[in-house]
Structure formats: structure tokens, C-alpha cells
Image (cartoon, rainbow, N blue to C red; front, side, top):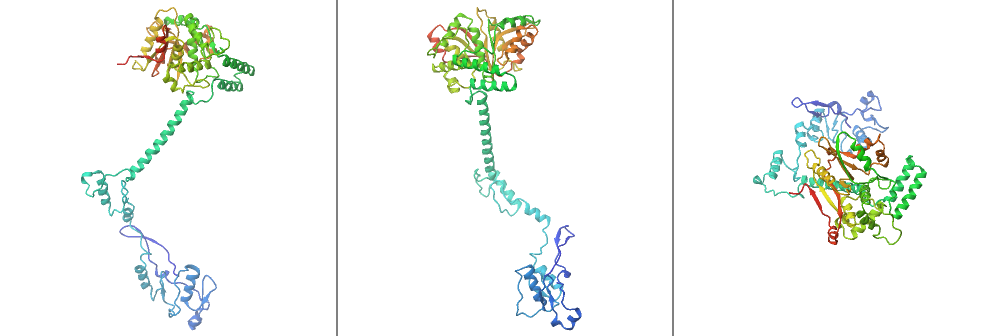
Length: 524
């Protein structure tokens, strides 16, 4: 066995680290003898050589070397031929094979020549850089290019059909690696987009009550329980409202807990006392209906419908038409009073009945033909369906885009102002719909500087807020909630439903089953 160290030295021309060949001093195996040196010189045949790693002894250096190699280091080391003559002690063994040499220069020359594949110097940096250079076409994944120039020429042939001398045909996505990767990434992006759209669609369905989760009664009980836990509602009030809820659901008459009556005269007084207002135009009468525990978040369309009906019941002709809705689909039971306001559940039943009669079949399909026991939103078209099915003539006006560069709707303000200025014995309020919410327009303020404000009731305003109109101290603050300037009306689109009389013919009634609207500004 020969021991040698690995050392690094720099070449003078390239400063590259290489492995040195074995040094002469490293090729001799130093072994200790079991006898003294003097005895060994006197009688060589009796010298016993001891293994430095165990107690094995032998009188021949070659056999001892074979023992050390095979027993302690390399089991595959070639064994010593027993028939071969014993080599003299001063021969030098190759550490990589079984050859021996009489002097170290011959051994070193042998190792460098015969075993150069094992003791090869490190590759120059230039060769390493050349080996690390990409040897694969990034377009078609072809390999085994001999030089970088050959690879570059091959890549050019993909993008220069005229100079294509190798006959490369245009690559299909199945052959091109980069296109395969692009195709896979596109597929993955589409899947992510599909899942995102599905999630957003489910959120939108839940927002508009289209997920069939809960209804007015269930939401009322759940939110009232939460109100009790938070201290907003007492236990006694909870049970009292629970009884009122059951009665309203059984009779179809709203319990009136969210209604604020006789507000028009208070609004007229507060608005008229404002120094900036030259004239206030208001509807004849209206009651405010606020959202409750059962419809908070989805019932604004129903509450604004109740505001419209609260005005119409004060007119004899309209009241007669409205009272008929209590008889529709009713098998028995006592009829409510003529001033009774239908509950949300009753309005849902009536809209379903109107759909069954052929009113707004497109809207019925969009809502799945079902409203009862759901939290589905309704909009301007459902309000038209309710009124038309009761033979009340109405008009649907679509302000489909802003008519001012700043995004406001001066055409809407002009139309509303003209509506309230027109002389009529009875002036109902207007139903106002925009994206995600609906409100009720009850009048217009004409300002001294030529501007205008709309007076709008919102179901999100609580009964306690609306009750502030009865106090001179709080009424101006409430009016600020109701008053809307053009700068506050910048939704992309608005729809208005206006009551325009009572239908006087069967043909008009049948024609009203197909919804029609007036677009402002008109289409060119």
C-alpha cells in the first residue's frame, strides 16, 4: 500500500489547479520488523515483518503487503502469485497495480503514463465553460450539436423558412417543447380562472339570495337571537317580535314594525325653511319602510315596493286595484283591511302568481321561477310585474349611461323634475333602481342658484333615524340623509318605475305582460 497526498498547484499559464503525481517519498511502505536492525542485517532469512494493523507476521515483504491490501484495505487487490519469485526488499510497488520498479523515477513515469486516466489533471476553465454551454435546441429539444455555431444555425432555421436548408418543417405544439410548456401554462391559467369565476359566481349568488340558503322567517329568528346576545334586543322584545313574525307570515300582512308614517309634511317643512331652497316638489304621501332583521341585506326591493304601495292605498282608484291582490290565489279566510300592507312573503307569492299568468317570463327564468321562501333580490322589472298584474299602468325608464362628462346624470334629474312639476291630483313617488340597491324618490328641491337636489328615501335608514324628522333639532340632520345632489348620483345606470294611471282595457293588460322600457338618452 502506498500513501500519498493530494496537493494543488497553479500552472504558470492558466492558474488552474491540478492533481500532482505521487511523490517518491510516498511510494515506499514503511514497515517495522519484529527483530532488531542489526539482527536483520546479519541474518535476512530470519527477519519477520509484522503487520502494522494487526498481529500478523511474515518473513516476506510482498506477502505482508498482500495481507495488508486484502485484509485491511482493498479486498479486490490482486493476490501474489505463489510461484513467482520473491521480489527483493528494495523494489518499489505501483500503488495502482502489481508492477514493481527498482527505482522511483521509473515508478513515477509508469504511474503518469499507464494510470493517467485515474490521476488526470483538472479540466481548464475554458473546457468547463464549453461543457456547461446548453447543447439542446430550446424549440424542438434536439441535442447532440457538435458546436455552438451549429446549434445557433439550427435555431435560426426554425424562424427563417426561406433559409431552411435542412428541411425542417414548421413545428406543431406537440413537437415544440416551449409550446408544450406554454400550452400547459395556458391550461393551468384557464383552470385557475375557472375556479375564481366559480367562486365569484357563488358569492354573487349568495349576495343576491340565489343560493337558496334561508328565507325571511329563518333570517329574522337568527338575527333576533344575535341581537339578544349582543344586548341590542331584550328577551321580552324577542318573544314579542317572534309572535308578530308568525302572525305576519300567516296573514300576509306586514307587522308595521319598520314603518314611519306621515313624513312628507315634515320633510316639506324642513326643506322649505332652508335658505338655499327656492321650491320643494314632493309626492302626495308616502310611508317609510326600513329593512328589518329578516330582510337586511337583500330586501330593499320589497321595502321600496311597500313605500310605493303605501302611497297608492291613499288613492281611491289605486286602492281598489291593490285590494284585489288579496283575493288572488286565496282560497278562504278573512280579508285584511284596505290599508293593510302586504308582507315580503306575500309580495313574493304575488310575483310568482304574476309569472304564472305570463308576466315577464324572461325575468321569471332568470330567478328560477321561485321567490317564496328565498332571499332572492327583486328589481325594477319585478315592481313593474306587481303593478301591471294589478292593472296599474306604469312606465319603466332606463337611464342607461351617464349624460355628463363627470359621470353624473343630468338627464335623470331633468326627467324627475319634470315628473314632479307636472300637475296631477295625485302624485305617487318613484321607484329608483341601480346596481346592488334600490331607493324611493319622493321629491325635488329646486335651489336658488339653479341647481337641484333629489329627495330620496332609503330602506337602510332606521325607524329611529326617520323619527328625527318630527323634531326641529334633529330634522335638518335627517334631511341631509335624504337630500342627494347630482355629484352623489354617479352610478353607471339607473332605472325608474313611475305609476301612470289605471289600465282601461283588456288589450292593454295583456300587452303589459311583455316589459317595455324607455331609454334615456334615446338610441341613435
